[in-house]
Image (cartoon, rainbow, N blue to C red; front, side):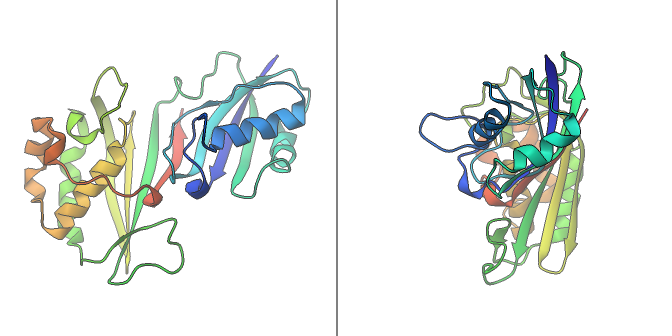
Length: 244
């Protein structure tokens, strides 16, 4: 028996998220079927993150157990031949049998991309959130600093979260902007349900002027979801990489 670690890139537009669901097409389901078609036995694919419907990934990590003797370096090309073109295996490697892509993760990096202009995108509409109001990027950058560190992020989670604790450590949160594109990068040891999208929505409201950047500490301490911004649309979110 072997344990194979995969690094995966995908466009989440046509899927109901990562995790297998009864009545919807998901990334995990498509990957499992593709792998099973190749190695001729059932697999259970463990993902490092449960991305939502419409969310993308450049560096999702997953692992599965197999009795196949296919060399690890041959798995990407072989599996990709069984997959649609919006899901791609970038890398495969043998790892110890104890490796678990989710529980062994030390943190994740996400990006959130905003198109800040009057008119919506004709191109790339599945990969950016459109904000037609001119954003105060400097104010958004100042707000970022207040999120960094270890906090109870109850304010920034949606209902339905099964997490045992809302305490997380944000290691970095910063913004890069070039012309009409504003990109938020966030790294943490873990994230609550919709946490990145709610933080992004809050930063957008800081940029619009609905929330003052120096009110962020009070909003965090309030543990009141109503104090934060709206949940930003899924299509702007991308899982950049997983740390181990």
